[in-house]
Image (cartoon, rainbow, N blue to C red; front, side):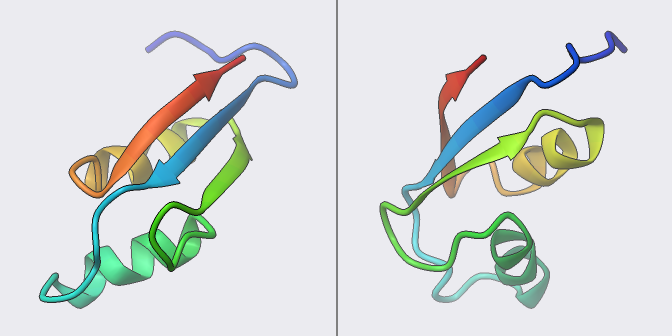
Length: 66
């Protein structure tokens, strides 16, 4: 796996509702700082954050990677 650049960030936006989703997916959204539709968060680009995004990829959209 490629290492991320120092200080790199990634912006994600919630595009799907957590209603009728497993509790694990709801908790992952909260861990990303998302809990309402169309909210955006800029997060540090780490393997842990990438894994969380991958887990709920159908509920979020990557807006910007820098």
